[in-house]
Image (cartoon, rainbow, N blue to C red; front, side, top):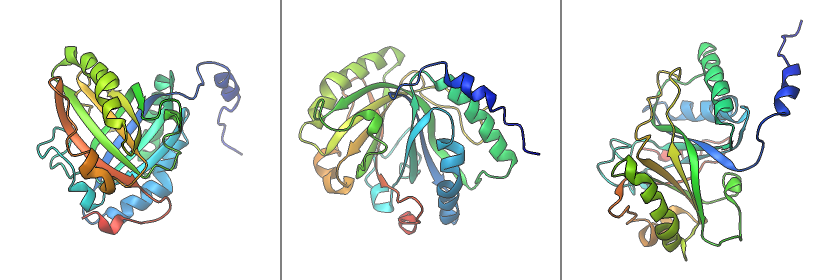
Length: 275
């Protein structure tokens, strides 16, 4: 006898609520596999968790996984980072888009499925979450205006690199000012003539109280902004000219600037270059 999956409820749920394509929210999760477990972690994430723990969930409609080989890790700054200690920690990062207005719905599912995966022994324990947060989208700045892919295409378009920038505002009252400075002045100036096609900007949201115990509560909920720079070339080819001096002016402090390249799904490419 087949298990009752309450399939009749699906038609009811599909008929209500927002279902646009705008990335209203994101999951950004930077992880460090424990030494000696890099291959096992990579295979677990690619073969199982990327799908069962992410893409198969309602309203999570796009995803991409990125890696920082050792030479990319060594480009990171600042040396004293509030995000990663040491700053080279966190060699994999996954980015996912969630439909605008569906954060609460998605969170109910993700908490439930992760408890189930844990019970079923489908969670790889030999890893550390360095920077894991659900985030609300607050801005996208494009280099080429209306031309080119939009932000909802960003995780499917074959971008060659990603730069993750984390900024902490001087205080909660300064974050809106920092965001406006980035959106209207700093990012348009830096994007002009650069290999970055767009920058998406997010602010973190607190994780639910019933989250998995191995994921620490989000820091900087009231002060932090996370920027994702999508590059049309390998970050190593343009780092010196475009990414060595990202800053926040007098409004905050840059706590992480970290380059990544895309993983090749279904392979162990780059795993031997992490250390």
